[in-house]
Length: 425
Image (tube, rainbow, N blue to C red; front, top):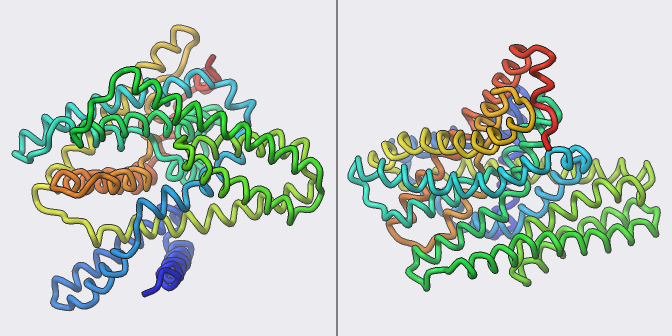
């Protein structure tokens, strides 16, 4: 099949699965679509085991032509991040900037070390060989929360505004640190020259700081252009040029395209929306990016559900996955508890903040894409399968129960305790 035919098939599946979910299950769209795609894939696997191997083989052949890493990291990601950042209020984000910054930096590093160490011990206990460096690599790719998964779920549940901003802000900004840590550990795993502290600092400045500065520059240019016209068609095209051209330029300059797009989206979604757009343009721009967001999210989560067809699960891998899921949750709990504990010295915070930030730290397609970028080998197979298991658990179990956890927090707390989850710093 040609690539256009494959994309058309994915859109058709996304539409059919979205309809089935809306008509019969009423789950949040992203979760429902992925669950149905996963059930569809497992059905194909069962048919293959029953002797109808042609069906499963054909599906695997089609999926094999899709480069998930390229499709997400250099295709969908820029659109999804911009659409998410477009609706984040900068004033709300500024009120929680310090706790967001600590979770997106310190939290990622601590989580990587904990997950890597505990995963190595767990795999040793079941005689599954994976070097300590590769376990750290798994920790690096699974530690950052996925903004796409987080935003997709947060849109459908009710959490206090300040808490929603903390979760959203962390997920949008922790990619820069996560990518630096991932690249550093990947270099060690590939037996390249070990990165020195100076190398890591330069890498962080280039990836994170460079991405933020580029996003500010491109966002400002787009803002000035938007302010000189009042035609929603032209302004939507300018926003598309900002996303596609900005992400491509960031990639060429070896800076974080994700951070560049997020910063540009925050600028356009706040100053641009307020000072450079008419009411008519704002309505059309919001509608356009909401449609793009929904379409790409649906296709992405269909892809995640279908990826099980090309996974090489063995009994050993299933046991490893069962051990790794609680390890990831524990590491997330520690990585959240330490910064929140320090901020409690400044003001009182309800314990529910830790619980929701822990349970709301969803993983998604970005972790799978990073796992797929690891060079081929037995280590990659193990990392990919346990990553997929964590992502599926995160989206299906954590995503479906996050609203219940949030509701319990609000219901259990007095007005004073609810205020405790308000702005920090």
